[in-house]
Length: 283
Ligand SMILES: C[S@@+](CC[C@H](N)C(=O)[O-])C[C@H]1O[C@@H](n2cnc3c(N)ncnc32)[C@H](O)[C@@H]1O
Image (tube, rainbow, N blue to C red; front, side, top):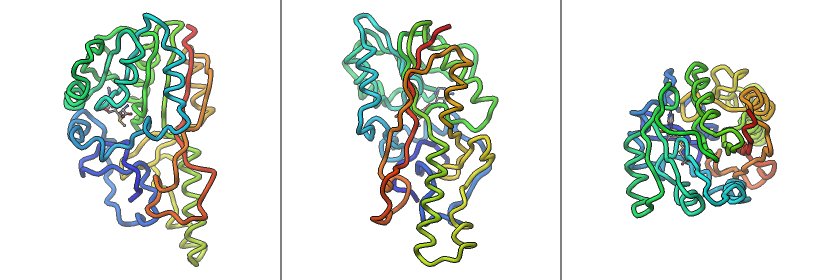
């Protein structure tokens, strides 16, 4: 499987970020559920660091911390939506007056609270963003890293809606989501690699086919789990429809060994990436 830890909690205790690994075709037992419920995330709470790809640690250009710094004015309150085991909580706690750490997984929140013991400005909120009542206020800044992944449009629609309403008017949303363009680029690289290894065109294409389920809607399987991937234009349209002005869209780029086991040396730029978006809520 791909060498990068995953975004996805699944029931096999493994979680590659993309599942596009060169060696995977036909070897991964797919399952047909749109998983990612509380239990799935609870199950990876103690192995999160090993299994779930660490976006902030791999944000080598500092897009996330740059915007977190820029928006950290005195008195500002921040929310980490889908905070997981709290990787970005110290970053927020150091820079903001108060921090809300929100997650559907009670186990992940427990790990986060232990890791951030002594940081008195963090409040932990156990809430399912896809449901109506959340019990936390809109804040000045909302950081949301790879939480809007659900393949189900009904669930994802609610997640997007709540996320957008978690920012106070005039406040800012800092969002990281998987890129559909990057998933397609990875498939192209896989094809190139197969051809260079002497496969017939037919077999090379078959083996590099994306593990998708509704590709036109951005649903690509990651380690067998259907996962939403986004187009830049889709993000712009989605945020505008929810009352946001997009201030920046950047690529958070990763090396190819995050997608493939032992990628060949010729496989260089363009690199695979996630989208980072900074947007201001205008209405
Ligand atoms: C891929 S992890 C990312 C965690 C963290 N943002 C990070 O970058 O390390 C996705 C997180 O979103 C949380 N999550 C997923 N669905 C959610 C929901 N409906 N409501 C609240 N949190 C949710 C999961 O529990 C998990 O901790």
